[in-house]
Length: 229
Image (cartoon, rainbow, N blue to C red; front, side, top):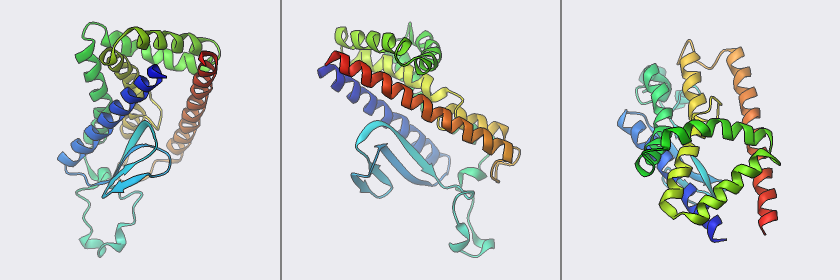
């Protein structure tokens, strides 16, 4: 139980850092922040644009985006302000802002494990995909190794290790991840319009892959938890 609490606390802390860095940087770049959510699930508490949810395994930042907001009701068309909208920022901003969240995690890993962080991040890509493809095989070995590490090490080493793996996860070229969001911004011809049909299909397939990957790892963790208990 203590090991599980260490994992939950470390992931919640890293998720809060990840989301906060993106929100603060976006605001510094002149982008309006619509919502900052910590965790997943139903809203437990909200204050202004901030929302707290019960499952502390991630979070999200919603920026003003004229592609998904009806701005015509705010003012006549000629008076609508778009300078603070994410989709009206330069391509470099749309690419680098999502990557800033993953970069913050990589920085934590480098600070806590300067000698092995980059290798840990690099191995993380293969581990995430291989474990997702084999939840009852490869994933069990990876989870067992992480469990042993958390048992033998203190909180800060665990925080550094998880920061590296979460950095790798968020850099995957999938739509729900920072890497995928940056890649889509690079691939779009017109940043102010919705994606072309083929990009929309690519996004849909990528989202289904994200769901399958998440479900596979959920099964792997559940099976390991039952065995440990």
